Length: 214
Image (spheres, rainbow, N blue to C red):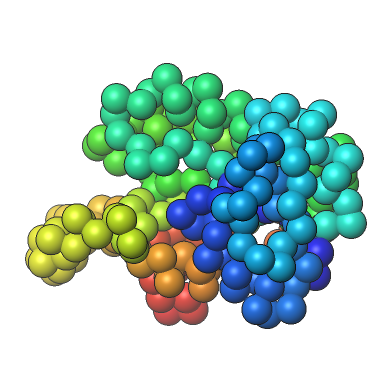
């Protein structure tokens, strides 16, 4: 399968591209000029600006699946302006480019919602989901809360708290929806999304990312 990836030099993008290539897919990845050395070997790089659809829309074909991974690194409440300037603008550009390129399947990493914190981040991601709906695209939306992995390990200390909250009926649903997933969980969920192209919009929440088919 031909797959186009935005955000291919990032925390999720690099290992995803490696896994896609390992499975025999042909992958093209958007990069900012000067950052091509960050792409995994074997991928075809496409120079462009993730905030400007016109800079890469014509380079998407022959890909029929687009995986959008652009986002502010290490999001926290103090980065609300970046969420608007990067996360929101990039998903708008990606949707515009996908529509222009007649993409059959758009994969978007959003965020679990609702939640009592990170409201600016959640609002922007929800607006990104709405753009997919209004664009008329077939899409898979993954909604992790926090992805544990290299450089993202401090929430491991919260795992006993999550285990307790999942045992209490009043907090069980929230603890499951806002659960922590591993980078390996996300890789597997994204690969499943690539292999399973929906008709319309399919949303994958934390419990399904952790335990597919459960």
